[in-house]
Structures are given as C-alpha cells and as structure tokens.
Length: 458
Ligand SMILES: Cc1cc2nc3c(=O)[nH]c(=O)nc-3n(C[C@H](O)[C@H](O)[C@H](O)COP(=O)(O)OP(=O)(O)OC[C@H]3O[C@@H](n4cnc5c(N)ncnc54)[C@H](O)[C@@H]3O)c2cc1C
Image 1: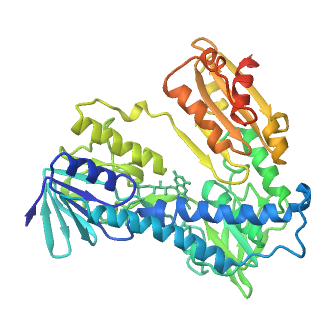
Image 2 (image 1 turned 30 degrees about the horizontal axis):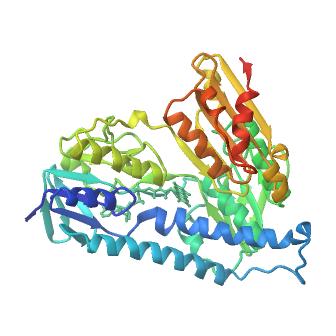
Image 3 (image 1 turned 135 degrees about the horizontal axis):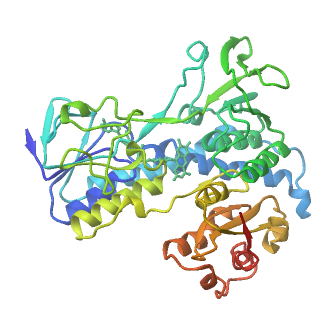
C-alpha cells in the first residue's frame, strides 16, 4: 500500500487544478484517471461541440453570403470528415495539455485505471492500493440510455458516439429537446442533415421562461428543423433505412423514420462502480454523492466535486467546486456552494446566455419585480451584423433593486451576459449599472438601457 497526502479520482474539470493547488502546498498527491484526461468537457462535451458549432456557423454564414453582398459561386457543401478532423485536433491539443500538466506536476503521481474505494481512506486501482487522509471524488457523469421501448433493438448515438460521424446523416432524429440535443440538432441541420427533435414536454428547454422557449423554437424551425413536442409515447423500432421513432403526438404523423437516432435525454453520475458503500459515502436516489455546503461528504476526509455531486452540470460549476474546496482547505477561507449564482449558456446560434432566476421563478418567489426587455432588432450591433433573432430580458427585485436573473438570447448573448453575472456577484443595484459607460456598438451597451426602462410586474 502506498500512502499519500491526498487522492484525487478523475482528471475532469476539478481534479487537475486541485492537484496543482495541493501539490503547491507541499502535499504528495495521487491522481487516478481511467479514461481520457480532461474528462467529458474536453473529450466529448464542451470542446468538440463548440468547435463543431463554429464549423456549422461558417456553413450557415456562407449560405447567407448574399445577404452581406458577398458572392459565393455554387452550392455550399460540408466535408464532415474535415469538420471531425478539426474538432479532433482541438480536442487532442487540449487533452494532451491536461496530461502533460499533470505528469509534469512536482509532487503529483498519475495513475491510469479504474479507482474503487476499499475503505474510507483507501482506494484500489488494479492491484495497487493507495491510502490517504483526504480523498477527492471528481468522477463526472455519462449519458443515460432511457428506458424507452426498443432502445436496445436499434443502434443509437449519444453525445460521445455522435462525434465519431464522418458523414452527414441523411435524417438525424434527436430524442430530447434540451441543451445537448438542440446544440447537435442545429449543428447537423447546418451540416446538411434533415433533423427532427422529439421532446416529451410541450416546449423545448421547458426550464426556461415560455417566451425564451418559444423564441428558440422559432429560430430552429426557421432553419428547417422539425420539432415534435408533447411526444408522450416515444419508442424505437428497427427500419430498413435506420430507425422508426414512434412519437404519438396529438397532431402530425405518429412516427418518423430517421437514418440515425441521437438519445439526448440526460446524464447520470459515474458513482455506481466506485465502491462508495465500502467507504460509507451517502448518495441520493439518483446516485449523486450527497455533499454539504463545502462539498464535504458524510464521511470526514472525503469530498465530491463536479457533476457527480448533483450541484451543477457544467465545467464552470465543477471548476468552482475546486475553488471552494481549495480556498477552504488551503487559504483559511469559508466559501460556500450556496453563494454560487447559477449561470450557463445554450450554444445554438444565436446563443442563449442565462444567469440567476427565470422570470417565472422570480414571480413564484413572491417578490415585487421589475422587468425590462428588448428585442435584438433594436440592438444596433445585431442589426449591423445582420443577426437580429432573439431578445434580452432582465428581472430585478423592486425593493432591493438587485438583479435576480437575466436571459440574453441573441448574437453575443453568451458573452454579454457576463456584465449581468458580474453585477449580480457584487450584489450591486441596477442604478450602479446605469452609470456605466459601455462601448458602442455592442450588445452589452443595451443592458443599462433595459435596466433604465424596467417596469413593475406582478
Ligand atoms: C455534449 C455536451 C456538451 C457540453 N457543453 C458544455 C459547455 O459548453 N459548457 C459547460 O460548462 N459544460 C458543458 N457540458 C458539461 C460538462 O462537460 C460537464 O459538466 C463537465 O465536464 C463536468 O466535469 P467533471 O469534472 O465533473 O467531470 P468529467 O469532466 O466528466 O470528468 C470526470 C473524469 O473522471 C474519470 N472517472 C470516472 N470514474 C472514474 C473512476 N472510478 N476511476 C478513475 N477515473 C474515473 C472519467 O474518466 C473522467 O475523465 C457539456 C456536456 C456535454 C455532454
């Protein structure tokens, strides 16, 4: 048995920076990774998808070239093998960077293999057993295969296997109209596939405000994506051209035949094969490791960071978990998970940048509210760019005059939302924002205007 000061399981978004901080503080650290360095984000999540979204945007803009007075002769084609090669290269560069960083980190030993707990202070990797007074679990999650009839009878894709396609599917049917499904849906439509999105709920991304969902549906339909919402009886069956997806919607054809089916219906934590019971670590009913406000589990000396604790399904939330744990352990801080203001983006084009509460959540909280909004048709930068779909909306507490949440669906929305994120994190009132002098012409410059025009609601 090898004794170290700390064991980290998983080289995803929290593990490597934590190894860096712990070794920097003089600890001997062992980091175990069973798969690819960088985890989901680098290999099968953020990095490949956003690289491919960029290719899809290039194809889209090339088709719209005439709108800008640019002449492109002939039809716009997409070389899927080249799109894939570009994404693979960006991913490989990032993954190799994480591996090199860890292997060159003084005080850090990298072990390859599947880690399982054998006790609250011991972890086995193959024939090797490590012990440490501190163990950090950063094992992430994986795509769920839903229990829909026929799912085992038909070959289907998930967020990992779809990245292996080097030809554009004839007709991609996506089961799941949320963040992952919509990014792939628009991207493959722009690559030239027919795309149908099948969603059980009456609207896409139903956690967002209804007007946000409706605007996104309009954007996707305008590109020729078929949306089959309210699909209550989803089932798969083999078909000579690929697969039949049964929908049984109230309206329209009850089935759709696709050459390829992508199941994008959620993720589950990688905690079922970790031997957590041998360490006595508690999980919830979905397998997420139960943690307190400092990311500590119920077993002293064991922490859970990132997607596996169920408190965030994003790279930035996993990284923030690392920051909280490192600051509390090494800097004498008392940072808390509950201080985190949720923020994220949906990377369709135009993107949706989101922070804090939706308007529906803010209304349900019973507060008196101020709400301001503006269509992107009234944002000069969007007009100048010829990309005027979407709108921005900000919700504030009428009493404290602090922002509760915002949505920017529009060109640059994923960047412009950061002005609001920063305001919310310093808990500044809207009046402070209104004194700022933003740069013209930008999407961000209209946020103070939206704040100035807010109206009471509720
Ligand atoms: C298609 C898609 C697109 C996404 N896009 C974005 C985006 O744009 N922005 C964003 O913020 N988030 C995005 N996400 C989510 C983001 O990728 C994840 O939330 C993030 O990677 C979670 O990080 P993590 O550190 O918790 O886990 P991971 O990154 O999954 O890392 C966990 C690591 O642990 C390893 N591991 C697991 N079990 C063991 C074990 N027993 N022993 C040893 N090693 C183990 C795994 O191999 C893996 O390398 C996307 C996800 C998907 C699927």
